[in-house]
Length: 95
Image (cartoon, rainbow, N blue to C red; front, top):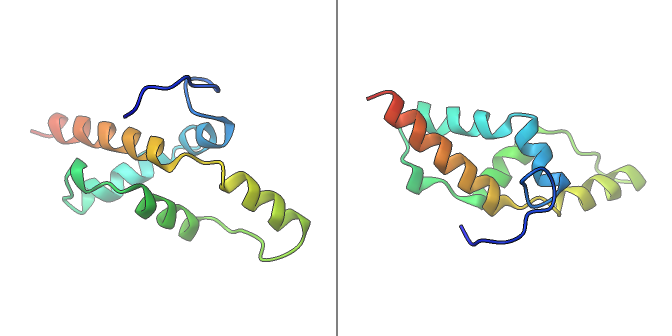
């Protein structure tokens, strides 16, 4: 992962931190582990798709615009890196 200055509790931003603090990283790790996937198979766009399947986003109106604005700030590459690292640890702990 490319080094950069992190701006919210060690995460890229508030929105990305929220995904981590609400334990979606662990949910993703569980999914990959249960499917027997390797850390190399973790893909940022797949994580975003999985996340969007899990959450209810309003389809129109000001709230939808606000939620979509926040969603666009999530750094899915950073989330993917956390998932890869946690998946590696889970795999090693189970050997």
